[in-house]
Structure formats: C-alpha cells, structure tokens
Amino acid sequence: MNIKKTIIVGVIALAGLLAGCSVSPSVAKINTDQSGRGAKGYDPVAFFADNAAVRGNPAYEYAWNGAKWLFSSPENLDKFKADPNAFSPQFGGYCVYSAAQGKLVEGNPENYKIVDGKLYFCNNAEAQHAWEQDESELIRKAEEFFAAIQSK
Image (tube, rainbow, N blue to C red; front, side, top):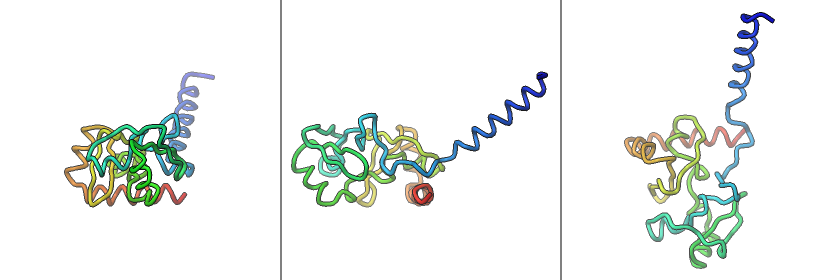
C-alpha cells in the first residue's frame, strides 16, 4: 500500500472512531468512582447539613440508583434514605459546566455549589468559576443534554 492510501485509510479509520465517541446509551445515571461509590465517597447530605465536602464512612453505606453512597453519620444516612433525590448531586455527579457544553465529565465533590436547594459538582475550580457566570442558563443547557443522553 502506498503512503497516500495509508494516510487515507488512517483518516477514514480515525473518523470512524471519532464518530463512535458520542455518548453511548449506556451512560451511567450516577458517576461512580472505581469502588462504585456515588459522590466519590463523600457524604451527599453533609453538603447541605454542614455546607462542606465531608468524606463518608463505609460503616454507613446505602445502595441507591446503581451506586453505593457513604455517609458520615447514621442521621445523614437516614435523611438520604428518606429522600435520596433531595440530596444526590444533579446530573448524577457529573460536571454541570461540562454537561452544559454537551460533554460528560466527572464532577469533583470539592468543587460544589448548592443552587435552589440542588447540589451541583464541577470538574475543577475553573469550570466552577465559568459556570457561576451564568448558572441558570448553563443549568438549563445541562438539563437538556443530560435528559437527551439518558433517554437513549
């Protein structure tokens, strides 16, 4: 095969790979760490109760929506069990700013904010700063994106 053909075949193969990189219908509803933990093992209730990112304790674990959730106290575990949707991070813990851009990127519990009673994660401080410039519009865009990928 000559060099021109090799390049063309390579470009076609790369285009095929890139076309296949769109978000697949099997995207997890909850962004989990390697151990299957939601919120990367942080206590989702503590963001509300303590206004802080607090690591959960494996002694207080609860399985919900395809993930294991850890809590820093039995009281927080009970609150979550009573209403998981009230405490779990929006977009399954994926980055709200990236979702608004049409991308699925891990959220970082250290970069969080509660807006209108809902918990949001950003991937890093820069993404959080950019998101905070137009939260309402970017939340709307992220909701559209996440709904679209979850409905596949």
